[in-house]
Image 1: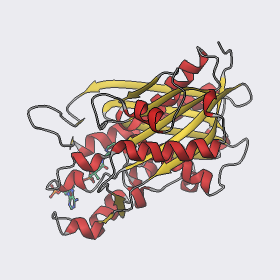
Image 2 (image 1 turned 180 degrees about the vertical axis):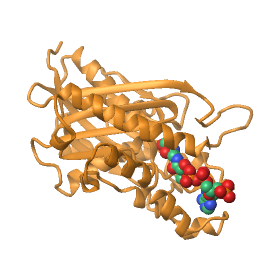
Image 3 (image 1 turned 30 degrees about the vertical axis):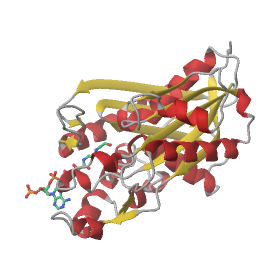
Length: 314
Ligand code: UT7
């Protein structure tokens, strides 16, 4: 049993399908256009699966994260996959990652669903499990095929979402401080994806989700700053769930921070739900933009309604 309070990310990975769907492609299917989508959301492209299963993406992202971490897989103590749409009711995506990547057989592997906040929930859940374990590392994945549950005749939702997966290997440590805020407010009206009576598409009251996001994300950030006894000026990098550029701009304004402290890739991938934050972290890592000691705040929000954030020291 471990007695460590901090956490650090020791490896990251991501995968997105090759198939790109541009705003112009969508304008041939529904009554929309590049100008509307770009100005209201910031999204230019998204990647949609053709042949890939959700677990294929999760496995690819996890493999990259494990290679990036360079750890011995036998030291993994837990594998968690966040997703709203696993390929099977059982086995879980996490168990399939375990099988294909030959992770140790004696560790807990399971999926969680906290929608777009799923990765943040996963990190905190993995941390809790590692505290009860004598193993050092945890593998947390966010992986989504939301293109499979989009009504391609509904212009208010089909333009927003993309597919992809991101993953991180975490380690408990006392050298890197870590704080987490998770919350939920049960609501099946503002945002839902039914799975009964043949219904299976994303339904959303967009402006209600927008209002929820622009109040909840800064609130979560300020709670994390209080916990860390820091101000927003002390933070080097903010990694928000990539849903809408206007949401990120509003958050930056409320925190009185320059937008260039916020990593943005939603123009390329759209909203990839639980995958958006780990994809962003993996891209940042790949580009060499994460330096030891950097103070980072990540915040997600989404269906449930849920929200989740973390203060991380790189
Ligand atoms: O992971 C969390 C999941 N969701 C989110 O984060 C979504 C948060 N919400 C949003 O990003 C925005 O609310 C949306 C992008 C979904 C919508 O933007 P909006 O500025 O709130 O637009 P709106 O829903 O108020 O619609 C304004 C107009 C409407 O037309 P009328 O009624 O004014 O004539 C819509 O029918 O824009 C119309 N519209 C579109 N027009 C062209 C809605 N979607 C489109 C479209 N192309 N794709």
